[in-house]
Image (cartoon, rainbow, N blue to C red):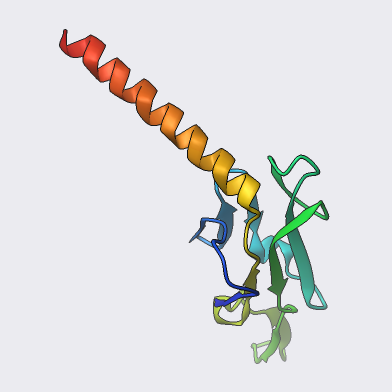
Length: 128
């Protein structure tokens, strides 16, 4: 996968497993399923409140994925031959990452601090 940062700044956390691209456990995209006859562009954006990520257009770009067109190959067979679809070449997928807005980063930081505090309180209750 070709990964490019569009501008300086902190970008979304993502993972890729078995051809599925995942953004912060909010959006999952099966890249092979999106492959078609032409290159496909998939946008991932934050909503108007800058809280929830979703596929499609929104208030703030998070990522743009370009899935290359399906490649085919002619294969000789006993009956003459046939055209077969080749699997998605992940090396040709482009992931453009946009910097996240400061308000989103601050909100995520505050949520993490609350979760850590709750976990710490649970541990203290168990040990007492």
